[in-house]
Image 1 (cartoon, rainbow, N blue to C red):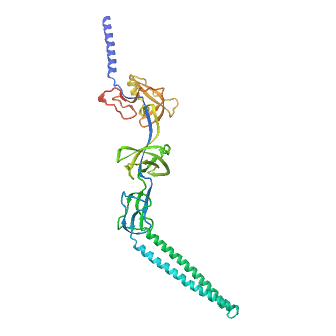
Image 2 (cartoon, rainbow, N blue to C red):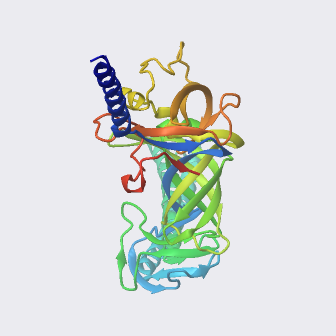
Image 3 (cartoon, rainbow, N blue to C red):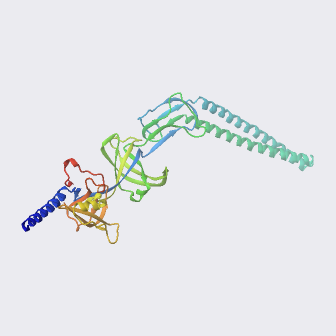
Length: 412
């Protein structure tokens, strides 16, 4: 009887041990995605879009109305200062010139006429004064002679003024006649032509634009829209790298020349214009091209860094339980939160451990950490989950593939 009890006790112990072993082997193991602490560069950049344009652009118009009679330049024509770009039909303005010349001649003849009248008035006044001194004529006749002389003098002045006005009108019509020939104001290249032969242009309210000239396409400028949140990081002299759709595999460089203070508000989004100058020796860049640019704001080389996702990772209670670790909700929490303090979780030998780090510069992929708490090449967790559990601890979409096994994965 006693021997039977001993056998039953041994069998019960073996059964309990087998059950415990089965529970451990059958329990779901967590999937932990890891990365490593690396050393390299961290570059912070600001991205924006802009439009390319010539540094100096001149719109050539006309100050007189008329019909385009001839065109002396076309798109992409290289022109010199003073070269004829177009001619307007001068017939109407030539008629104005002839009419105004006739008016000038009439005004000058009128001056001669009133000057003769003034000489006659002077003669009559002298005679009246002599007769009045002898008391041979009444005083009223002397007064009439004085008035006639003053009136003739006023008529002379009026005729001279009318002649001056007629000459000014003639000069204006002659200038208008000269303006029927449109010439290039600068040396440059024609990037736009807005008229054709036979087209009528009207300059009644404002000068219509006939041509647009670019002074030098070997020097371009990029008008970029900078978001107000990034404005504080933009300053003159910064190096800019940009690309255009026409040459997607080629990077162009420029320099920030000016940040304009006039804001632009579109759908409650405030942006400011930054002018970037860029050399264009091969003339690959054309006015109007859209460019995607990036401005290097800060850079740190040869620093210890961790993936930014590791700073956002915190294991859930289910993950810690699956690893056989004590669940502590305050694990890794700083006593006094600081903007430069953060927590990462190292993963070695199936164990997660929180490590307090001091962070520095960050870009979209990596964040600088001060040396001392982490080693280069040390494994840190970026994501963890328990299969079959609704609780997942991650900072980004999972990169683990269940078909490749449930062990930790590394990105070198």
